[in-house]
Image 1 (cartoon, rainbow, N blue to C red):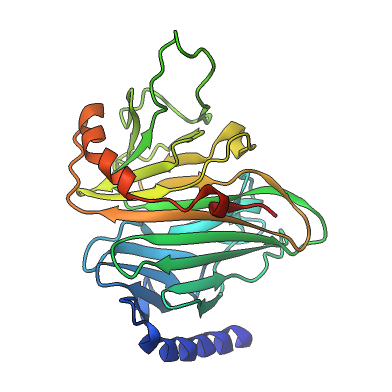
Image 2 (cartoon, rainbow, N blue to C red; image 1 turned 180 degrees about the horizontal axis):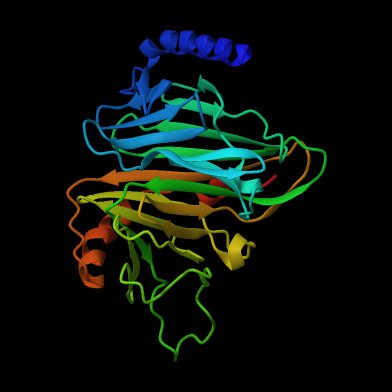
Length: 340
């Protein structure tokens, strides 16, 4: 703990010196947030991000300046396993897939390192997970203008043997919204008879639940804070985007799809889970065999849009969201997934 305290003091000094250098419209400052005294806020005057350093790595807030947090904040929900007490916390986090208890639920309740990386970025790195030998890193870069955020996730094998895994990026969204997921483009039976992509269900998935809308162009999964029964599904999303709409604000993720790669959970690179307390937008990298000392890197691009009126039909959603998908430029696939 002494080392952690010294580390945070040093980081504070570094960031204090760095603040005047943010001449391109991005500022960084130390702030208390979410009951955590040592958070850092990045802002370009349009949107702001807050990352934690007393726990994590986590991005606990993303939203328009002075506006709603797109992410859920869940300080008191826990799960006890043989590895300790894991907190959901909320916000954005990095796991390694496939999911298993207790391996996936290594607690992230301790201080992490946080250092500036360039004029508009911050680098977050946790201590090595003693139970798994994996070390997680997240690089967060905010564009000087607009809402674009680049989030680079890294897993490094600090253990003694190879591990078969995938980067699993998870954003716990605030209640009361809905996830939007694109269907594959329609092709008639006369033109194509092979399968388009996987649709994967969990044992507790109920396709008759009214929170689902199975459309021709989009799948919608609504969050209802009055309904606690969980729902989850996954898809092979070749179109590389998913979104969450709440109060006419649209959070969009762009992410890569690697043709021919092996993805977790029977072929999913995009999943969503909902309960009464949050809804998760999840994206996944291909599975890799991570040898000792090697790192896998996986990138998401985030965008946020105001005054988005989707309506409830495929046609109204397509009219509203189609131009936004084109506007939300993704990182090139060759740079978004870097295999070890």
